[in-house]
Length: 490
Image (tube, rainbow, N blue to C red):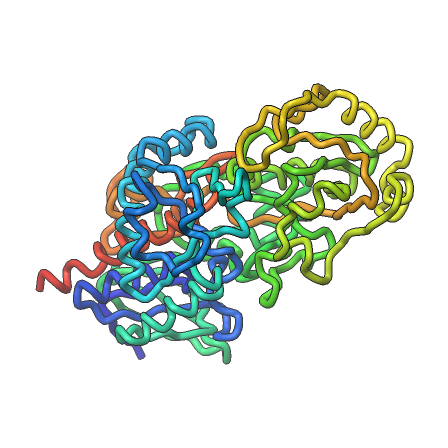
């Protein structure tokens, strides 16, 4: 039996729900199909910290959206105009971001955040993630300041509540197995193995990339990527992406790179932790040093604000012996670490009263670490240390540490073992400025739209933190509006 809807959305993360909300605004009857069970739903969005990057000339422009906080009056939140957002996209991707899609992302970012607030999404300044106390003020940096209340969990909970209020029908345990272009729609298999045919005026694909599939990772990202740890949902295996390509959709973007971070080395390799979610990331590395099992440093921990480096350092960790690295701190720097990450349990790490003892407990070469730390400590430029700004307190070693260099010399010492945690892949489908999927001749495919990780061309090699959720919402909103437009027209 074939069921009929105006719009069918494939994938129930932030992008899919944004598409569903937007299609309903056009008067469409919407079905959302989610591969995971209700208990495991939300896509990668559920596992995030809920941070959104968007443009504004003054934080006061969006102050009405933010939850009250007594620290607000003592906060320094710099302007982040559209020109800065665009510059960051070009700079961080090495100029490999699609200019038309980037313009859409940036120009629609703020309005989309405000639109989400109208759906019930709640916002707050991310003090514990994005600010340090400096001169008695909470100083924010890196172009990323605002996130959702209760992180990714809160984002998905409120998306779901809004969709149900709007009359969106959500079916969990629904794995799409076929994509029908000639007569529009999909076939999906339910949890019991039964197949269902859905006919629709339009289809929106928002089912994620291929980051949870080891074979696809090795094929597209290269040797060793099958060993990466999956940060988020285990259901993003690339099947829907492949269905679209087989139907004639054009691939787009950088299929050889991804978003990958420093992740707890003992975390599950096959999927994220529903309770801890983003707490398994280890992102205070700019304050300390990072070494491999030989005791050698291999990245510039202070090259830029964390928001501009964390998504590329996972690949550097993967290249180290055993695919593992160690973030090291001492008594001076330990109080500056993110509490929700470094005070969470379980955690792969150790504490010791001497560096040789710490090395032995973590499995680091003792002599190698002694040599590295000695050279590092002796090379530090004597500038004032200030984690809230690029302080120029550098270590003149190879590789250098460009900012925030502190001698590792005060017991007790702390070390945390990290692996490469893959978040999402950058290669996807080519879409136009209305989120409609294009074929290999560059022509729009009737009735087919895409959003979220499935959209290729925005990121390459790296990405500005928080732009992924913003992209999902911006292009999800566009996709839903475009998919539902014929209903409004009729």
